[in-house]
Length: 283
Ligand SMILES: [Zn+2]
Picture 1 (cartoon, rainbow, N blue to C red):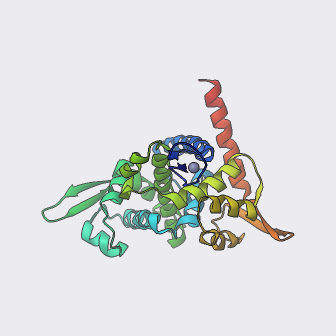
Picture 2: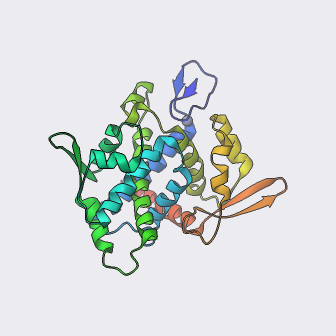
Picture 3: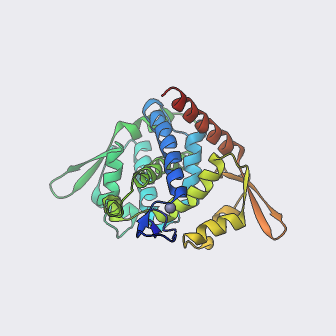
C-alpha cells in the first residue's frame, strides 16, 4: 500500500493509506496554521524581522522556492506585494501574465489567493482584473514612509506572503484522507516535494531536536522517492550573514554531515508546542 500524501510504500491489504509521519505532520500544520492565521488577522505588519513565525515561513519558502509546483505561488506573491508598495491597487490578468512569464493557467493560483482573502478577481469587459484586498495593502501601508524601505524589505515581506500561501497549501493537503480528494487541490495535484521536505525539517525541530544527520534526511527522502540532490545544495548554503536560514551551522561527523537548526526556529517551535499544550488543557 502507498501513502496518499507522501508516497511511502508499506506492505498491506489496501492500496492506499496515510502514514504515521504524515498524520503527525498534519497535526503540527494545524497548530502553525491556527497561530499564523490569528496573527495575520490582528497584526499590522508581517515583517519577518518583527515576528519569528513569519521568518520561519519566509525561510521555508527559501528552501522550496525552486520547486516548479510551487514557483507560481511565490512569483505571484512578489508581484502583488510590489504592487501594494507602489500603491497600485489592481492589475489586469494580461499585466500579471507578463510579469510572471509562465505558461501555466493562473486560474487555480488566483483562486488560492482569493480563498485567503488577499485579492479578489473581477471581470472587466475582456479580461480578469485582480484587485488587492486590505490584507496586503495594510502591510505595505504600515511600512511605507519608513526610511528603511528598500528592495530587501520588499523581498522579505513578499516571502512572508508566499510563506502564508505555502502554509495554506500544506494545510489543504493535511486534510486529505482519500485518494480522490487530491483532485480538489489547486492544479489537481499534491505538493509532494514541498510536503516531504518540510515534514522532515519542521517535525525534527517541533520535536525539540537541535540538529539532524544528513543520512537520516537522505533515508527519509529516498523512502519517498525524492532525490536528495533536490534539497541538499540549498541546505548546504548555510551562511550566518544571510537573513534567511532555518539552519545555523553544518559540521562533519565522520563521513556524515550534521545540520543545526537556528536558535529562533527552535524557540518558535517550543512556543508552538506550549500553545498547543495550553489549548489541550483548557479544552
Ligand atoms: Zn505519508
